[in-house]
Image 1: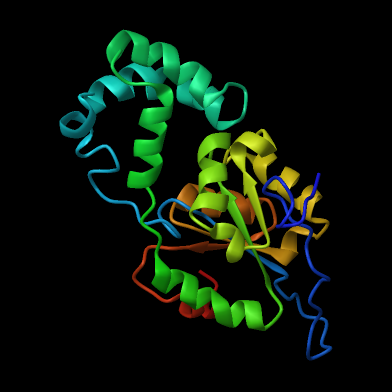
Image 2: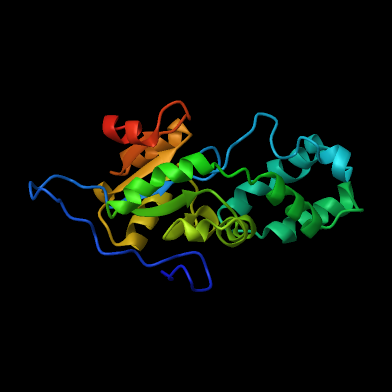
Length: 225
């Protein structure tokens, strides 16, 4: 299902396709699909849980072993709820914390938005290219990113793994997103910091750009990644 950016939810109806301005029959990118973590939101070597133990009294190693290693794969593709799985883990490992408290801490400490990257998207938007998000997220953080962090003001739509039912780099993610946009695979290009996701996008018929922060987006687009 597609929803407009102002509706409840995170999907927005796309604009009309952008044709070949020169009339030469060349493939023209209609949508740039932007990854979130590692591209739009800066990833830091130590991660959002760097001060977790000092701040909230929970060891990051324990959280990883008891929660992420056990539950994350199902949560990420929408087969389980983050609060429902996190709550019982905290009851055992950190009974002084609620799932809501830890989620709020996590989301706020994993929200270093790259304003310079956002600024690089504006010239594309001005040429008529739609800007969408294509990201591996569960429902709670997806809503935080879209509404609280304000990404709904910069992107026409968000396609995330828990809603799609598949996570990058699984081919199911790419085929489902293509069906939802109504465009052909060749009309879509993914910019992502993970080479395996870029390779999977290309295998699915999309364009693929590997973002490492060392080149501008314009340079990546000009050189095809």
